[in-house]
Image 1 (cartoon, rainbow, N blue to C red):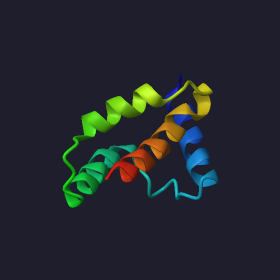
Image 2 (tube, rainbow, N blue to C red):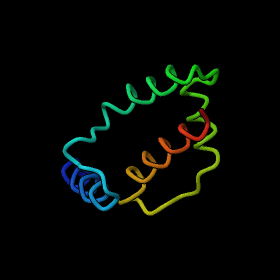
Image 3 (tube, rainbow, N blue to C red):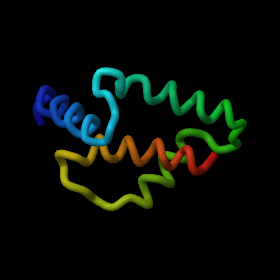
Image 4 (tube, helix red, strand yellow):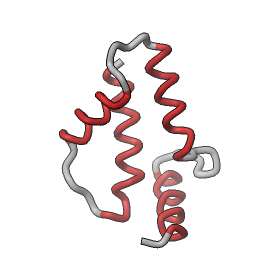
Length: 81
């Protein structure tokens, strides 16, 4: 996979989902989720959420999988708080 291809798909999929691609950065996700967990005083760690989420997910088309996975993972963490 070519990085510029992945970035174009990320931007298109985020835009289609109603997110501003210029604002959402993958690098910020770890910090954002950490703040969510700390703010909720959650006993579960981020790795625990990650492992249980990955076990429950089924395979998807490669082009959309990464962005869709991130959006669903954030929703999963929010539900678990």
